[in-house]
Length: 451
Image (cartoon, rainbow, N blue to C red; front, side, top):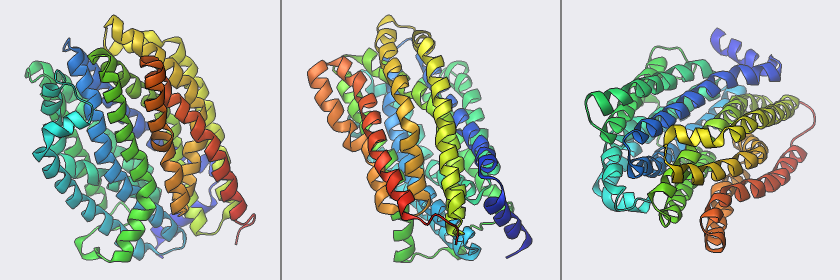
């Protein structure tokens, strides 16, 4: 073990867990906030096109972005979880093999997704929830998103590897640089160059390529313990299987998020483009709120993985407790603030009375239900970072899948548009109850003392 590896190992296994989680969580939170802010900026700038159809297209493309994120997070968090445990047990060479294999596999798979989706673009947009009036806007936007797909997918892998290594600040630089560029590029391409919604897509594509180049440069320049090189690729079945099965919870979480977005858009489309636009705006606002708690939770993952690999179980327990309570406090403060200004927030994105009416009620319901989310997310992250593959996969499938899909189908039939607005909060509450069981199971399973 060289000096840099030893220093990092001591930092991850000896620094008080509360300060370590915060130190790693702050850069991740900033990344999440900026990333969600530029997603919201896209929605706001598109809203200035004076068309509910254009605003609805952003919601449709949100489902497409969720697919790309699902693949990226599967390889990124799958390899990252393994890497943090390998570094905790002081096996950095093997960690680099997993990182290189995950990165180049994701880059190739991103290119395959790009080609397949471009060939089937029109039916894909309908599948994602587009209406006939939304379709032209959605297709214009989607083309640029898909051109950048290989870079988008592999950027998530690079970002997660750095984060699990404990280099959250470096990961933040790569992701936020692209996000800031996107925010600046939206008005330039949309209004100065008069590209309309295509300009928003082009700005997003350029930002993804820039983020990719910055993140890859961090590894090439030797600023990370992990090395990424074609020479380190090992396309062994057991390595790919380990990465994919460990990353399966992320695939399920993000993939089912895409499915739930499709289902939500399809159900909302029955009530017109205003309903699709309203639910799209609510999703963006809620994700922005939750990004703070989620960012701190992602700061917890490398702490959990490192110390689990080093068999320091007391630190694993302490990190879980701190992250849960801290995230819960953040959710309470954020949700109350948004509840007070719900109508005004919707109006910032689309100043349409019908959109504001639909969106305000949905936003209030989701903010109240957000209080149930921290336990679900932290428990899922705990299970994934410590290699509890089956349990983490089961828990990941609940919020946007097992619970949400029946909820929206049943409630939409029973209560119409109000039922559509209520489906996500119901799934949050049910996921919370299940997470209590999984958290209890895990902490009964691991030793009380360090080994």
